[in-house]
Image 1: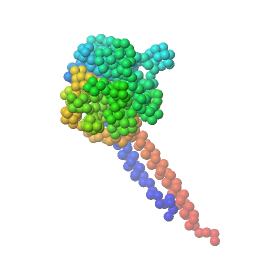
Image 2: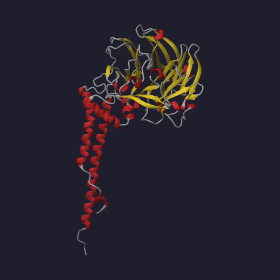
Image 3: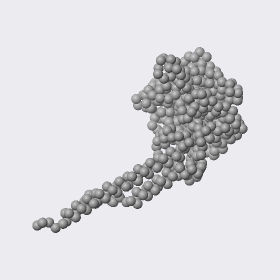
Image 4: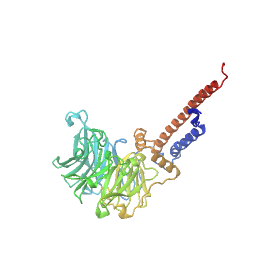
Length: 457
């Protein structure tokens, strides 16, 4: 028997069954969108809502480069009390009760004249602003001009005291520093290159290398916690000494622990910590890690049938958690059981705060202390199909598509498009394989027939 005859003949039924399976998976997200099934932002037009569900306190939300820059605030009864969009990027927002119970500070950035950046071609101004959301009164507290490299210059700041800010510098040279805003003077700086090799870690250097998206001053320990997103980790820096090696959560490339996470919040020992609650963005989940002896152990996880690329999570004093779900265009509050108890639609939210609960997770307990239940999926059959699909597909592929798709398209649409492409490829491959097989089989059979014909002798 020839080698060709030893190969099993491809089955048309096999190819068609595979193609049909891919069609069904592809159609599930699209059908969910058409029918308005609650698996993401189906039916949401991407506009800023005029009102939201009532909540216990003002809710403030920011939008960065995902869509037009925006900051909006909603009163406890759900009515919109403030909105501004003059900046290209809005990132960090924090309650600022020292300025009044309706006050926040936020970070915003926009393009600036090149002369402000030593005659560079590009220049951007980052501002730390104080805002009263009920009166609209604003004041610039500090500003910095810099040439952007890969991303915005500053994503986050944290007040050390009334005159000093610790700043997360997301652009080159990448790092964190403390500035005396009253004198506009840096008093301490840590560069990421002191700890990381630019040629062996993170993203492109000197472009979007670390993507340092968050910083927090830990008053109970005198440390600075920072989030170099592209290193898949949360680090703790002792001023004057550098990174505390045995405190680092995650590591570059360890996507089982963290995958390009955003906005970690530290929960101190007095509230059941040390613990860190963080938006594990590329893993499409919110996680919390508890410090147990000399290591971090995951103590809580939240993920429902819609969450796609979350970028902020704040723990409230009552054990609830506020989540910004960027690619599903929503902000949700989940209770101790992991159930959604409040939800608002919002276009591409970056960060959200509920005034009266403390800055970020400042007043919230650790999950282990409060007995919070993890949640891994909910939302019915369609949501289950989408979650299973997301577990199979590379998250960078799905989230990358969502950067380029129109805002009205949802995460389930992106999943459907990927599987539709796979279906087309599988169908084309199957048909091509049958054609090749027939041609080869015909050639072999003809050759065999020729060789078995009577000879001239």
